[in-house]
Image (cartoon, rainbow, N blue to C red):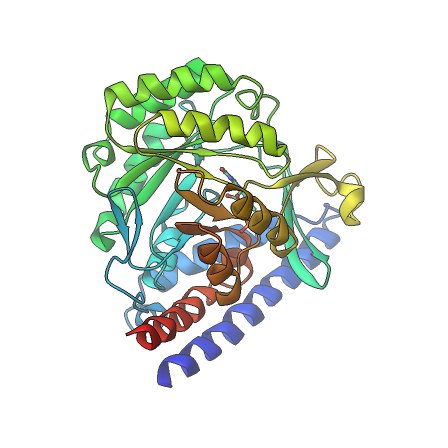
Length: 364
Ligand SMILES: Cc1cc2nc3c(=O)[nH]c(=O)nc-3n(C[C@H](O)[C@H](O)[C@H](O)COP(=O)(O)O)c2cc1C
């Protein structure tokens, strides 16, 4: 009961503080005649969270346990809960907060080998669709590059949580995916294959060539064969909800032909700003990838369509509640991935875990 009260109070605190930061940043941006930019709010929030992690009396408020001891699995990787963070964040204080709150593991934001600026700002906005909070982003995979990101993860000592952590590889071409992989292979994480995995992001709608491998499945198959010959780390392919069922099945066949290879069913859905009620300059490139609850029906349909396909599935796209997690697992997903829900209110982690705990005890 005390646990539920803590979740309730944290939820109110998080939502109120986030609204306050959002209001403040929009006022500052308005006064400076700048366009609204949610990334400022996210940046402020991340630095506050970094502070909280270091505050002895406040940090324990964010600590929650997982519902089970390693019941969920993705090949040999074991998870204490099926909920994971999808690839969208690399700031280690955020990853540490979600892990403290009881997430089972997750995938760090896609990195290319070389540092990337990403698209011009503004490149992420919040939108309200069907009465739900969603995001549209055209980040364009900014980041410090694979080696620098892996060093930061190592420095933050995320392995103290002893949960599987994935690395997402990006590239504009096969050689760029290979370059990111080569840097991964040199990292400490690559040596720890009992709790590391690698996902190939072939479905980014926000870079010019982010989906080039979707159009060249056989190049991807060759690449995966080559990666498999170099390491026995679990590999995954992240697909787009915009793909047809036939296209998805091609990738399922490829995953089946590679040992220990899974499919992640959902990235964002490509939309123009006008499609979601935003002015065309609300995102610098006029369009982006929509994420959040409005994606869920498509996520579930895709998992249902792939049920029994012989490849483990991660259900990503719109998952934010116990009911949705249970529906995805019931349809055959091994794990679920969450992104938008963690930005909007990460107390969904202990809430879902509390529900799963109740389900586990009822089953005993
Ligand atoms: C701000 C933001 C950045 C993202 N960056 C990545 C990324 O680097 N790599 C990737 O595979 N997916 C990325 N995604 C997509 C998410 O991982 C996820 O597939 C998508 O948002 C759908 O899940 P959701 O509805 O739970 O947000 C990003 C999503 C958001 C909102």
